[in-house]
Amino acid sequence: MKKQIELEIFPNNIDNRDFIKTLAAKKLDVNPKEISAIIPIRRSIDARKRPLYKVLVEVYVNQQPRELNTSIEYKPVSGSKKAIIVGFGPGGMYAALRLIEWGIKPIIIERGKNVRDRRFDLKAIQQDHIVNPDSNYCFGEGGAGTYSDGKLYTRSTKRGDVDKTLNILVQHGADPDILIDSHPHIGSNNLPKVVTAIRETILKCGGEIHFESKVTDLLLTDYKIKGVVVNGEKEFLADSVILATGHSAKDIYRLLHKKDILIEQKPFAMGVRIEHPQALINEIQYHSKDYDVRLPAASYNLACEIGNRGVYSFCMCPGGIIVPSATAPGEQVVNGMSISRRDSPFANAGFVVSVDEGDWKQYKSAAPFAGLKLQEEVEKLAFELGGNSQTAPAQKLTDFVEGKLSTSLNPTSYIPGIVSAPLHERYPKFMVKGLREALKVFGNKMKGYYTEEAQLIGAETRTSSPIRIPRDKKTLMHVQVAGLFPCGEGAGYAGGIVSAAIDGENCANGVAGFLNKK
Image 1 (cartoon, one colour):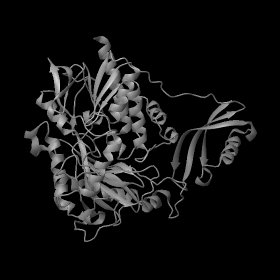
Image 2: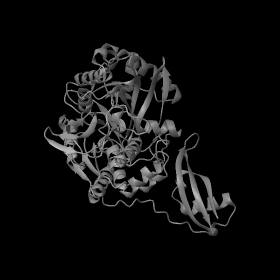
Image 3: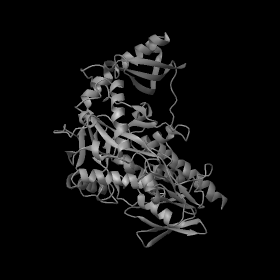
Image 4: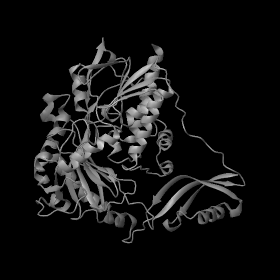
C-alpha cells in the first residue's frame, strides 16, 4: 500500500526518522514496523503560530518503492543540424541541453568568462571598484544567477516542466533537497560546480562553448538569420539563433534597433535594496526572539498598491549579502545573494516600484529606449551619490520616510561600502512617493519591519528588462526575423533562474520545429 499524507513536525524532530515513522504510522493507523519507506514530496514552513514543518510524504506500507531514474541520457550530436545560442545563463544552458536531446549541435557564444576566471573580476568590483563590462555579476558563465543567489522559486508552472528543470540541476550536482523544498535554493557557493558540470555535459556531447566572445553583429539575408559576428571579426554560421543575453545586455538591444529588427518598450521596476538584521526578520516571522537553528533563516514577501502603482519586495535574500551588479563604468547597481547556509547576519530584498511609460515620458524622443534611458539615469545618479565609485548611497529607513539625511548608518553586508545620501531628495519623485507609502503599509503588515535598524541601499534597477523582443506566441520566433528566437529575461519573457531555464527549453523546441521544416 502507498499513501500520501501531510505531517506536521516541529524543528526538533525534523531529522528524527524514528519519530517521523511513528507519526506516520499513527496517522495511517498501522504498525510502524509495517512501514518500509517514507519519501518526502514537498516541505514548507508554517510560521503562523509556533513554527513547524509541513511535510507531504509518500508512505509505503508492506511495499517497497520503485526506484525512479529521472536523469536524462544526453547523447553525442553529429553536427548535421546546429543552432547558435548567444548567452550562457540559465536560458542558454537549458536551451543547449534541450537541443542536444533533439540531436542538434549547440554553438554557445558567451561574452563573459568561465565560472572560475569570472571570480577575479568579481573581486575587482568588490574590492577595487573596477567594473569589467563583459565579466561581472551579470555577464559570464551561468549568468546573473551563478553569483547572485540561486533561488529556484517560480510561478511559471504553466510554461513548462519545473520538476524536470530542478532534476537537471540535481543531475549536475545540486542538493536533492531542492526537489522537495517549497522555496528551493542552491546558494552561490554551490552553483559554480553545477554550472561547470552542465558545461561538461554540453562539451562531452559535441556542443561548442566560446567564452570571451561578444556578438557585435547579426548576419541577415532578407530578414532571415544566417549567423552572428563575434568580437568584430569572426563569423559563426547557422540558420537559427537563440538570443539569451539577459536583461543587462543593452548593446544587443541597440544592435537589433540598428538592424531595423523590432523591439518594444515594456514596464519594469526600480527602487533600492532594503537591509534588516536577519535576527529581526526571524523574530518577526517566527514570533520569538529565541531562534531555532533547525529552522531556515526567515524570509518575507510583501506587496501593495500605492496610487495605482505596484510596490513590492523582490528577490528576498535571507541570511544574504548585497553585491555590486553594475555592468559598465559610471553606474551603480545592487543585487542580493545568499550562500547555501544563509548564515549572514543580514537579510536583504529588492524594494521596488513599478515603472511604465508615464514615468519615462521626458525621454519619449529616445523611443524605444525611453525606459532604458530612465534606468540609466537612476544608475548614474546612484554612482554620483556614492562618490563616483561602487560605494552605494544609503539612508536609514526612518530617515528616508521622514525626509532627513542620515547622520549615521547601520552595519551592512555590502563590501564596497555605503555612504549617507539624501535618497528622498534625489531619486525620482514617483519612486520616493511609492517607497515611502509602501514602507508604512509594510510596517503594519510586519510589526517591527518599519525600524531605524533597516536601511535603503543603492539602486536596484535590474529587476527585469525595460525592453521586450517580440516573438510569435506559437513558434517563439521573432515576429520579423526567421530563425531568430528571443529567449529569457533579456527578451522580456522570464524572471529568474527557473523561468529562464524553462523558456530556454521552449525556445530549443521552437528551433527543432523550425529546422525540421527546412
